[in-house]
Length: 79
Image (cartoon, rainbow, N blue to C red; front, side):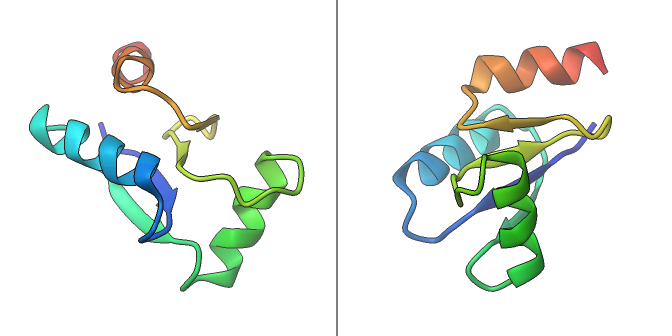
């Protein structure tokens, strides 16, 4: 099961989460909101107008802002 992570290249939280996911073998699609204005608009729509990253969107359409590795693992297990 995969998901989409919205991020920026300079985001330390994003880098940390990406390395944790990779270490655990969890696949995801990454979208840089600085390169994709539509993605930035989406992130703002689920974060009260803020471009908060990482924002993760799961297959069921639910979103999580700055989730932990455990949060993501639990959500993926429930899908």
